[in-house]
Length: 341
Image (tube, rainbow, N blue to C red; front, side):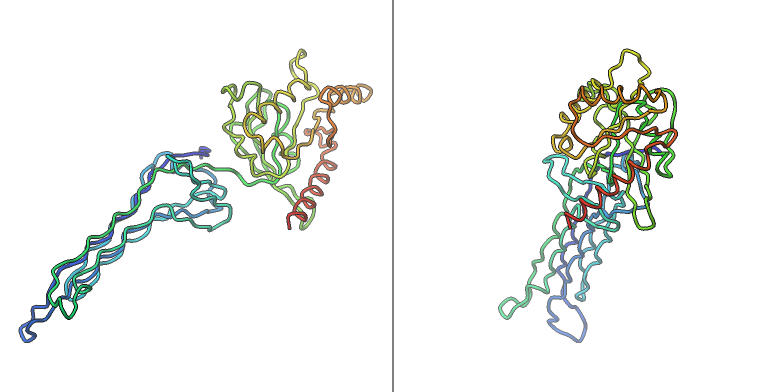
């Protein structure tokens, strides 16, 4: 199934049914009086989060969702039937905003969480509601109210504890394959990852976290270079970013430190809050360097970045250093969860 993480839709709630004007007309009941019933309620439109769905592809093509109108009132004080509600099932992590104003409608972060998108119109009142001692034969009723209509924007932001950043071919997909059961595509050319992948990393029986692999980011992404910023939204919910750096880039003229600074700049351009998230450096592909050159290469990158935060040396393809990295990530997440609690 094609991965779609944004869509625009229209939702139209149903109109309420009209109230009825009716009088009892039975042979042995003279002056029977008013008996017009109320109109039924129009159908509303709801959205609910479903953990079994992982893409918004259905809403890319089915853009208009309309609930039915309520039934009109009838004689003998019979009320009209209310219309059924329409429920749109979306992936967990979907953010729904008003396309015109940008106002947040709902942020669905839990399975079966539900949100009202468009309220159905209320049914009108029949003439039985207007009878009184001074108005014994009312001939007035109210019409049903119009239902709400909205144009909405759906955005999927995957729920992950840890997000991977890095240039194309830095080894992000290889790392997620090494530490979890996720199997993203791996190849020797850039941009093999075209959409986010999630993997569950199990550290112990009751200790695990979710890691997200996103397409590579390059300099100029803010202007649309590469795949642009379109997938960075999937990192906004994470607690920690792992910035992978290729110690042995394919291009001999490439500077890993310069590329790392470029990615940090693109991150800041996209969202200052995302830029301020905890970020660790992970120097990858140490298996391609002789031991006597490894320490100098790592020191050169860290010194060029003036990096004082946590850093790790790993080989995603052989697994060297991955266990230590995963253990440190798990400890960090448990500490941050404890502080929040």
